Image (cartoon, rainbow, N blue to C red; front, side):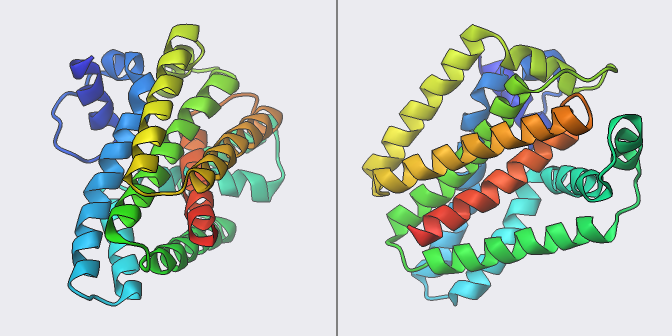
Length: 251
């Protein structure tokens, strides 16, 4: 399990885990909420320290974006941009796949990246008024839900018609044993965050939002492409992360 978790960290973050074993990472895909928790903590703790010494909330929110890209390498943002181009094109089938694989970015992709950044900035700045323990818990839970959303989308979506890296993760996400393990992890993390000071109602609403995003994206990808790949999972992560930040900022 530890080897699988380390391999999964290597694939989904820029942390120097040092174990790039694809099959181990896929086998440990059910532990993706733990990866989200690690990401969230690594990002939230420095932000909490800045808030503690009185740094302006907007500046702290800007540092959030920098830390987020540093920890994840921006790989999910790449998926967001690729699939937004597909949605904006209104193409389906092979034409949609060609657009998604095109390395050039369209204006809608750039607009989506800017909108996600603005939502992140505004939400994190708003949550700066929370007690520090609640702020850390909230930021951590946001990344846990975003990570789990990828697992749900993978389980609901069709496999790639080619031998892509995401294909192995999708197979694991359909196994009843991995589904039950992943859900158990979410329950444990939710309880820990609730105990740490975040209201349970806001956590449950955020989780529901994450599952809703996963379902909508999986259905949309099936209609447009016929399958789910790594770009779709990255798109899911970004939309779910932004939605959860909004939920926590509003409730």
